[in-house]
Amino acid sequence: MKERILIVEDDADMRELLEEILAEAGFETIPAANGRIAQARVENESETIDLVVTDVQMPEMKGDVLLRKVRERRAETPVVVITAFGSVENAVEMVKNGAYSYLTKPFQTAALLETVNAALLQSEPQRAAARLRRAQPKAPPRLLVGASRPMRELFDLIARAGRGASNVLITGESGTGKELVARAVHETSERKGEFVAVNCAAIPAELVESELFGHTGQAFTGARTARAGLFETADGGTLFLDEIGELPLTVQPKLLRVLQEGAIRRVGDSREKKVEARVVAATNRDLEKAVAAGEFREDLYWRLNVIHLHAPALRERAFDIPLLVEHFLYKYSTAAAAGVAAVSPPLEIVPETLALLTAYPWPGNVRELENTIERAVALSRGALLTPADLPERIRGAGGAAAIIAQAKSGRMTLAELEREYILETLRETNGNKSRAAEMLGLDRKTLYRKLDEYAAAAAAASGHDSENSTDGRVVP
Image 1 (cartoon, rainbow, N blue to C red):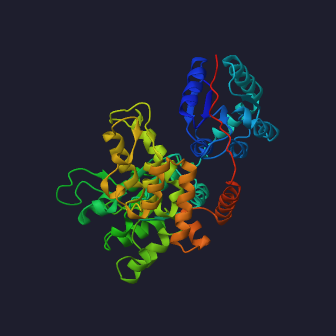
Image 2 (tube, rainbow, N blue to C red):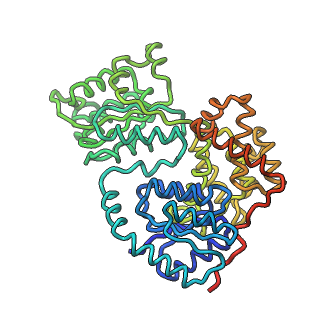
Image 3 (cartoon, rainbow, N blue to C red):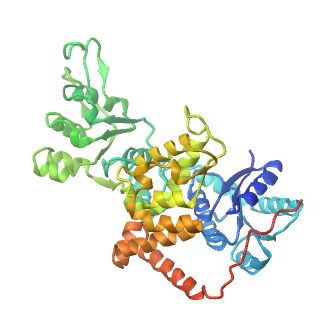
């Protein structure tokens, strides 16, 4: 199996050159245009990363911060630093903090390969042990993308919920990924049976009971043969009841009995059959209000709501939008999307486009964002995803006007866009940092740290000449 190297470099030419050299040497490369994308890769427990090659001075996240993230999540993974002459002191400090070694630009291809091979050789025992640990049945949900505080809290709850067999109720607006949360609970568990999903709102009321519990061959007109229900299909696994708030009142007491007794009775049968299916339900309705209105049984509500998970709306986790955009760009720009014409390599997104996507309120949540990226990829005019590739409703979003104007005039970096978005959010909250942190999906300490960084940068801006870390090129 090829060893996998994560290449973190904001200069596209340098990144492509490093990919070419390492690929020709027999390695599998994983490109990342900035530190935040690299962090998402590092924090994805299901992905193998044998070595990280990173620049020091990058706009989205500097190399020393990325090194700390790697050391925290993958202490076994060596980090090789590539730096311009002006940043050597930073690189030396990174080596002191755990990086394997550093190379200065320009450098010889042989020197790069020698350093990479030495780092891989030295770290092999630790990486082998880590591979065995990761092979165990635990893993944060692979299908969910996010690094914001609401998503980190959700990942933690999913991992803990997965250990047991208690019923789970998932709430959240339409399009927030409630079924993905349910699948994550199932995958995190040790259940050997299937994950079976059913939309309660999509089944005609007169057929719900038969679909859930099955029926005999003579149960009703048209029932020619006996049929197992979804509870039996999910025996030993997980039954996901989506839109549980739409379950007819006439069926609710029968579902309650199954949850209490652990046994089902097929329609038309007098015998009960034991089943061991864990029930995970989801709804975008306020079930407590439905209970008060007499539209949902209170005893069933509390039987379902043993463990409550909430899928946050996308506006509550705007910090994750760049990660989700990158994820969907990769999904729809490569052959990973089965049945969709592949576009290779994945499209690059320009700062103005990302600013528009970040500022838009996303009433349709992640589903709307995914649909938007799929459409943009399908209709893109070239290798760059520009504002012209977005629907008019997003291009014309007034809340982003100030940020977009700056982005268009100055070709802002992603770090600068993040700064403007944070400051714009503070303006919208009239300086209420706690509210701004909540809207951004950041904890308050992170927001305060970023604001301190912005203030320090503003104070030092006069006469400050930033270092240029992308002038060097690899010299064979």
